[in-house]
Each structure stands twice: as C-alpha cells, then as structure tokens.
Image 1 (cartoon, helix red, strand yellow):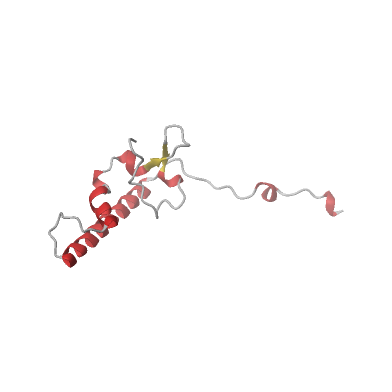
Image 2 (cartoon, one colour):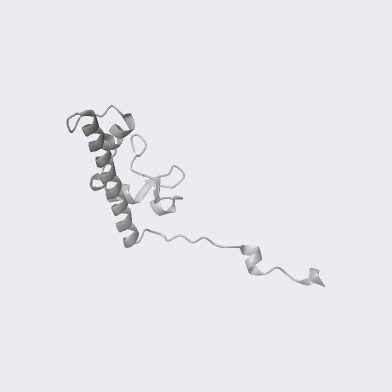
Length: 117
C-alpha cells in the first residue's frame, strides 16, 4: 500500500533560489555606503601609521598592504558605475557579471580587475 503513493512536488523539486535580475536602488546605495566606509577606514589606518612612523602625508609607510590600499586601490568616487556594480567573470558572455550574483558580495572587494580589462 505504501508503494502506491507518489512523491510530492516539494520532495522532487526542492527549494528554488531566486535572484533579482539587477541591483535595486537601496542595494546600490548601501553598496556605495560600504565602499565609502572602507575608504575612510583605509585613510584612518594610513594616517595612524604615518603618525606612528613620523612621516609626512603622501609618503609610503613601508607596509605593502597598507600602501596598496592607500595608493593603488581606486576610491568609490573614482569608479565608474559599470565597475561599481559589476565584476569580471570569464565564464559570462561579455566578461561582466552583476555583483549581487557573486556569493558573499557584501563582504568582498571588487575594485581590482585583471590587467588590460
């Protein structure tokens, strides 16, 4: 008798993950706010290291990661909207992927692109 029952749709299909086709305006706003917060944190770390070492502003600190973040990483206002809201992906048709389709996209930085891209 138990073998006569068929599985329900929820058992055969499972949960569907649904992604929005594009970032919403509040998502873009929060992304820009996070980027500005990161920029201010980088500036605070740099100023603290400069004060600690007794150097002038604009000089490298000698710490490669701090210097990369301060001098080589583009600021939020320097990025084009295309670079703010999309990222490089070699598997996508035009090599651009919407940012919100990347896992943990609120925790990562996407300001560095491959060379010549």
